[in-house]
Length: 92
Length: 452
Image (cartoon, each protein chain N blue to C red):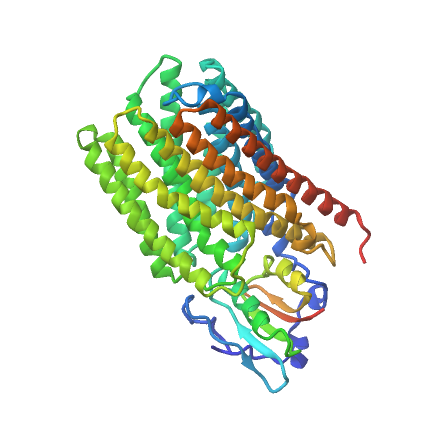
């Protein structure tokens, strides 16, 4: 995968499930607060399936962390290149 | 949708900054660059604290000067002072705190001049106090001194808001509303200077035009456009609902801007003032309808539909805006100096803007506090752990009651009913202060604990 997500902001792309059992979301290119809302909606919908969520973003989602904490989730940084931040979200 | 292409097991080789490689924490830990997008917590919370105190001050003024209210139709006096405790003390101070904290985060910018923002708080708060005292005591010299400092601070705010919005290209709707708010703020400040000049005996602009410009640009231009624009970021965040599309945001924003421009034009073209104001109301109704449709879409797609007292306050604010438009039409059709003009102002400023603002503050203050705590702590407190629910419920109930009583007191020209409104409003404002103090206490306690 190379370019940012071209999906228009009013139609965020759905998560995909990989062979390793993790959900994946590429949220680059989406304006705020769409990435945060998309992640939290995913967590609400898949709260009980026990799978981690891998996300790619353009920036560190500082507003997401309080919401994750509220739900008992934690974020692990996999990479924080400029314009390409990768996080693994899982139950704390 | 392009899936993230790196499986977790293979992600490790891409880690280039060891310090950021693995920091599991409840919620999450900030990456090195992110902290620069946050103001020091003390800066926005200082503005929010001032807003809460000035809000109490406004209702105390209503309580203690109730006899002045039934006959008031504008001009210096305590009702004007209370109005500015709300507009400058509460609404503008909160706008500074919310917008200058959220916009750099949203637009990936480093916070500009945090020391300046901190310093101007020390100028702004006493200046607002002097200004409203000058209005209440009919002391134009105090009024002029306070207004000069307030205008200077708000010019700085307008510049910073404009710079933040300049980088917000991906949020076209928010930027359109925000830039409209910045232009309106400039007009508010110019008209304020004209009004002050008039009061100190050095008029340079027509009084009626300056007054109309000040009201229109302040309530519907600066604060109204800012509230509409920030709603497109805040409401989806609060409700986890769908973000309205850019095109729809732009359409709603264009209609709102057109309504504000028409209303402002009415101030400059006295011969066509009535039709221009009527057109402004009609286009304003269209703009509100478009905005409300988008907000209904957010709530309709929301995963968190019930926001508690916070959501009810926001919805009460929209209901008051719906009432303000016919109230404005009645005021236009009535004699100059009728009570309808005052009621229009009450419903628009206290009913719409103040209710909506406190709906936002009830929700966002614990969120911002938790965000700031997460900057320093591996396991910071959650927003709900920082919230005191009961004072917020008391605040919402007392706020609604106070507004109803104040409207009734003005309609009936009854000072005792206005006094009751002041009492209810003061109870509500005290409850909000209890919430705010509790939030700060819990945050300070959490920050003082050793890292787990």
